[in-house]
Amino acid sequence: MQAKSTCTFKGAGLSCIRDDRVLFEELAFELVSGQVLLLEGKNGSGKTSLLRILCGFREPDSGAIYWCGDTVKDSLFYAQMAYVGHLDGIKKELTVLENLKMSLALSSPGQYSIHAALAKVHLAGYDDVLVQALSAGQKRRLSLARLLITENVLWILDEPFTSLDKQGIALIETLMIEHCANGGMIVLTSHHDIDLHGVDVRRTNLS
Amino acid sequence: MSLSRAFFAVIRRDLVLALRRRSEIANPLLFFILVITLFPLGIGAQPHLLQAIAPGIIWVSALLAAMLSLDSLFRSDFDDGSLEQILLSPHPTSVLVLAKIVAHWLVTGLPLLIVAPLLAVFLGMPNHALGVLLLTLLLGTPVLSLIGAIGVALTVGLRRGGMILSLLVLPLYVPVLIFAGNAVQMAGGGLPVDAQINILIAILLMALVLAPLPVAAALKMSIN
Image 1: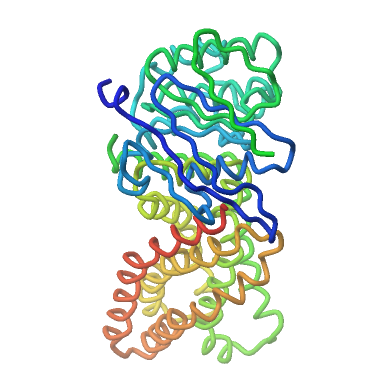
Image 2: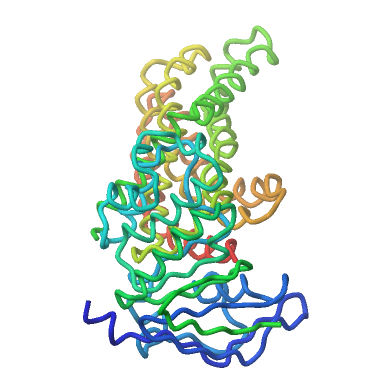
């Protein structure tokens, strides 16, 4: 837990050019534990591109990203982050339990056990159900359950509220507040107005 | 967080997935059997000619069957985002990718080994060459999966990568084809095949060590 309190997530001079179009330039941010960075902007303003750059899927066209003072490649970044993107990253031919076990095998165990996490996202009792039988909202909650079972400090979430109903959104907001209270940090994009009580939310507008 | 646990978890997951979508196992195998049975039909009643070209037929069919099955290696993971999660894992990507290749070989390469002796007898291959045929398949088909994985990793991001994939991968299969085909041919004539087998072992070991690295790099490129 000590690592959590001292870590910072920092980007400096980031820019992204896609098909000769500059999406953003000289973007900088700094995030310490307990904070949320909310990326705002119109469709096509580069929110997802920025998140993918933060995950390391894309190289920024300029600038660098630092985790706890080191560049991402030299740090424990990948052991301490979790990403939920547009694609759920879950296999529809596997059961709920098999999917979560796989995520767990790829990372290290975190705060919650699989069963506790499923109960937390209101999927208790769905262990042996094939994912293809779940609704879109249930799949989303399942992919968010991944955040709970693995050890991580930073959550990178791309439109986490997509296809969730009101209760689902409230649930994820509660989880996010809890994560920040435990010293975690979150970078997210959302079209939905988020309501995070008692959390330091920074906003960056990309357009 | 242990690497071996992640390695075997990936293999187990892919095997379970293959069992649940059975076509992945059945299609390359049926293709292999079908192509081989086409030759006697096309050539007609010339048992000696058939016997002479049997090693070539079996190996070329194995090559084509392996190539046909390659696309399933990363396609579904790419489409549903599982590949992103694998790349984000703190474990080295090349090791996890190797696990996927091993699972792919178990699902598509190993069944070929099981039916090959039957088809060899069907083509009139002499019995004393069957052992060598099996050995070359055992050493050669993993190489096909390993080299093929590089091609798939490069083309998985393309919408219509099928044709490019075969153009990329087939030339790289040539050394395996030459040495494996030659070994079976020689064994049929009762000649020693140690040299060819040794070269196949060397190719396999090299591919095992060297292929996962470019696969991991190519996947990172494809995903962006």
